[in-house]
Amino acid sequence: MPTDSFFISPNLILRRCSPLYKSSPTPYKAAMENITVTGQLCDFKGSPLAGGDVRFYDENFEILHSTQTDANGNFEISVANRSYPSVFICQSYKDKFLEYWHWNFTPKANDHLNIRIDGLELYGMKAWEMAPTYPGMMIFFRPMSLEKFKALGSPAKDQPVLIAPELAISDITVELDGKKAQVIGVNKVREYTTPQSYLDAYLINVSTEGFGKVKRVLVSIEDQQTQEKGMARIDLF
Image 1 (cartoon, helix red, strand yellow):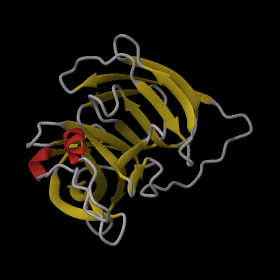
Image 2 (cartoon, one colour):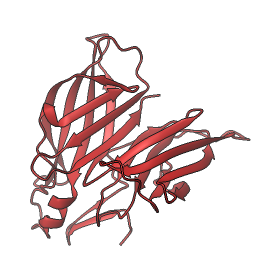
Image 3 (cartoon, rainbow, N blue to C red):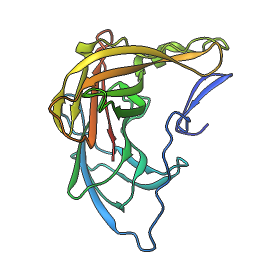
Image 4 (tube, one colour):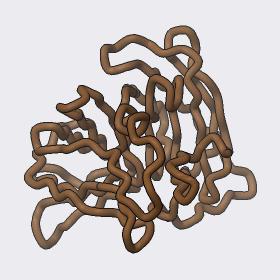
């Protein structure tokens, strides 16, 4: 089975190439410049994590660039200066941690990513601004709990796959270009994989009053039941 698939039952395999996220291909230039991306991978207590995998994916979910974190959790990698539909970063994947995702990653000069991982992931993140209707943003993501995934076992065919945390406004933190924003609404929605089977996802409302054009969004969540945490980012342009 591919590393990036979750085996739920003989009838349901959740693959990382899920059509949840689509991006318009960014064509290569004849001589594309490279750009250096650095970062540090830690747990949510701030302890550096060595040997973490760092992968930059293209539109077909093929790895374009990869590296690993050093003994201090740091990494440095030269990548083509283009947009990447997703970046995966994790250590001890599906054993101790679930991954950090950076969606629609557009590297910038002197980009340094401070990354924290624990038992929650935020998959398929999308974000869009509501202006000029009102100063707000909608953010969608499908979260998963490692503890709940391990306890799930193999559900019967066409049954709900209940592996998401229960989240309230107080469990969600959003930063827009590094500045904390107010979460003003949380909507729990269902992502159906068949007419009967679904996973829980969230669509949240965030106030953008006082912000300019937002380039990067960070969402952090905490499951009060399991005490697991997770985070993910998305670049808007």
